[in-house]
Image (cartoon, rainbow, N blue to C red; front, side):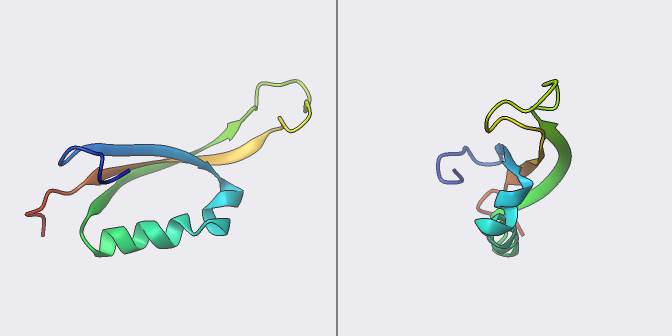
Length: 77
């Protein structure tokens, strides 16, 4: 995702809470910040499928988090 992004562009993505630890998102994002490749801008929690009156199959109220990061240019310090 970072390689395809223009310099100083924004990375915006969402993930279920259960995937954050299971797929090492937190660890990978911290490493990219440490390498000065991205900068954390903000995050916000929300529920996916929260408007359904009741669960339908795999579609049930699911906690998620959206992230915003900025790609740092090559000259970033």
